[in-house]
Image (tube, rainbow, N blue to C red; front, side):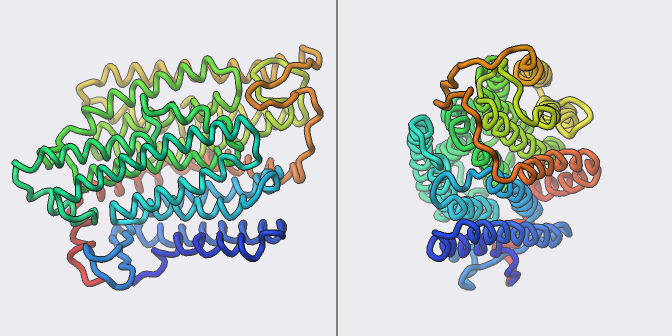
Amino acid sequence: MNHWIVAPIVLPAILAPFIIMVLRYHLDLQRIFSVAGVVALLGIALTITAQAAGGDIQVYELGNWPAPFGIVLVLDRLSAMMVLLTALLALPIVLYAIASGWDDRGKHFHALFHFQLMGVCGAFLTGDAFNLFVFFEVLLIASYGLMTHGGGSVRLKAGVQYVAYNLLGSTLFLFALGTLYAVAGTLNMADMAARVADLPSDDTALLRVGAVLLLLVFCIKAAVLPLHFWLPASYASAPLPVAALFAIMTKVGAYSILRMYTLGFGPEVEATQGLVGTWLQPAALVTLAVGAIGILGSQHIARMVAFCAITSMGTLLIAISLFTETATAAALYYVYHSTLATALMFLVADLVMERRGGAITPTAPMPQTGLISALFFVGAIAMAGMPPLSGFIGKLLVLDAARDAPDVTAIWAVILIGSFVTIVGLARAGSLIFWKSHDVQHNTERDPENEEDITAPPAPEPNPGLAFTAVFAMAMGLVLLTLFAGPALEYTNKTAEQLFTPENYISAVLGGDT
């Protein structure tokens, strides 16, 4: 068996407890091992992506127990590209957390960070629905600790809300798995897909109930309206480097929809036919619209970026809900863009809040305002989908994929009007924070969101050079995604083709000797 497949899970699973038990009182050593672990994860992710690029689907059987009796990990193009995205996101974020001193404001930041990476990578690689639930819980438990890192009553209140809402989602997940197991007799994704296809028509009602519950759970994770209420307050109140890492968590929900509804509940299954398009598409359109309005009405930069995350998820899920190869390829390209753009905006927001507070009102000019405004400008262009960056390419691909959809007029109108409103909202915030700040005197307002006096001199960053390097690296990722859009789209097209031929996945998991 190819042991590279299990390495993205084993590496952080070993490193996190090592940091807690051996290095808990040595912050410098924690930082060294943490960065080394993320660099190693990036190397592993590049290796397995190269292995998956040929189109072969590889299976790793834990304990040499074959599917469906044992737990399996499955490496295909989709899982490989999502693990690579996780590693590419984690490296600049951990460097920024170290450079800005965020990792020293609470306990166990680096251990929780790697437990989070373990859960995310496990969710992308697992071939079993119950283990998808297990890895969801691993990443959520780690995220609970990261949410409240640094303390504060506002952060604790948002963390409790985040915990309560996600526990509800976990409970629904168990109900969905129980329902599906009662129908299919298995939770291995490939085995479930094979059995669901052979179910008699009399048993399809319970199957549809399970599929609807599962879609509801994934929509909670993906922050689809009206299940998005947890995201703005939670992301805006979390430490913003943590919120930047959380940009991948909503993509776990989108990934799960793609995986489960192309494999087990695809259009050829009569009981679940049209489920994603009928239910998901209207919710995704409303999610995009509400997110854009939230950007325009936000009075705090962190909350504004949280609504940017909601808007990007709306666009992504519109593409997924079209449920065609072309639309899925566009969605996969947009996954990379939206994750990097959202993380970039959260890091820029943290730079702003550390220097002048988060309220979107004119104040005295802050240090390094020129660099930060340039980074904000790049992030705003990317998030709004303006040329020449990858957001423009991604939205153009989604619009093109929707040309033959029954609701093409509504899709085009919501995406284009939402993009315009997003541009206006981000331009308003940028002008108030960076431009009009040069025309006012130092004032004495308090920042109600952060409970900090924005007139107090900010604590100097331990290493501002490294912090800016990490943020510029995130911006450079968007530039590279634009310059290499051709190879990226070639990969996503092949990935979409592989997703819509589920028989190859099923035969690889159930029919081979590996």
